Length: 179
Length: 231
Image (tube, rainbow over all chains, first blue to last red; front, side, top):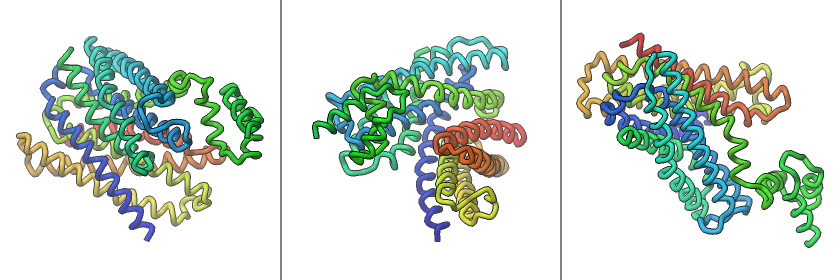
């Protein structure tokens, strides 16, 4: 009995989560000819996807805690906790994505003997762009869910990893085009 | 009421790194949960919310992202195959998601089992752990078949010339790498969970980041090795 209950719940959540991953992968396949032109992009990609999921996931979890404790209200205006959280997330994404760009650059230089600075600029710009998409999406969805009587903790985890993957790949694509 | 208000104001003035007795007193006297008091101490009016978050999160985020980037080096070594064999490219983000999800599920469920006494040092005797292993194994098999088929079909629609032989290889890579990773996730969760629990620490705080980071890294390495073997 416990087997089928767990199996049912985990399989349903997994299917939803990996469907988002497949959409992200399909986007990646569409931009193959751009990916080809930038060395070290595959070094950057897993770290970038991980970072996006971690930062948005933590942002949503912290906001949910604040909402449940009554420390913050589900509104955008005059919300000190939300502003602090958004500012921290923006800063974290900028710092970590730039650092990932440097890691990809040095790894590419050491392991593949290719010197290409563009990956640092791509990481930085993609970090900025993904902030513009993902942070408002995370904050507004968390507030919406809370206002409608749902527990954001149960829903936001798979949601932010899925939307984070898609927005990260779109941001990287735009950054490649810009650079 | 005013005394309670004064005490709560005192809580927000406690230095963040102190475990001041006033927290304990307020919790006992007024029944306010320790988590609420902790939250007030962390993000109260005297603290700069963004500064607290950045300082506490930066190290672990940098570490987790660097570990994933190390896995990325193995991906870069198979760039040629990834760019030519489109289904592999479509598979990658989905597999990454799946491994992270299984890492979270196994770690959190194993920790709960430890707290409920459903598993102990003789973990191999636990009926609950056997059930969890079977559930995860069965789920990971079905989901990896699903992503293998989905990636192949999407790639075919995009114009990739898919043969039955290539389809079988893609399916084998998805299934094999997932089954190996599930076994590794269980090993890390059991060894790490028992070790941390034995030191009277909460495995919830450590096990998920450790399991997901290591599983992500190994997933990319195993994926690269299997792609190298099959193609």
